[in-house]
Image (tube, rainbow, N blue to C red):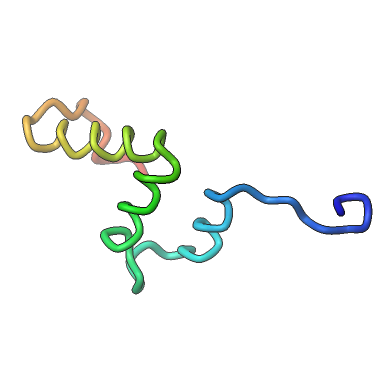
Amino acid sequence: MRDAGVHVVSFFAIFGELMRDWRNHPGAPDLWPYLDRYFGVAGFTARGHRDAIRNGTVQPGTDLLP
């Protein structure tokens, strides 16, 4: 199929296309459970970031990242 011109993309790439702006509906709170279930790396990253915010261990300067 790729040789015929089909663009082969990953599951996460499809989510990225659907969620060009994560503030719109369906938003990140609606889709993170699916990412967590089917794309575990994203779930681990999101949970780690959430926990770092909750316990105050976010590294200085990360609030300045785009």
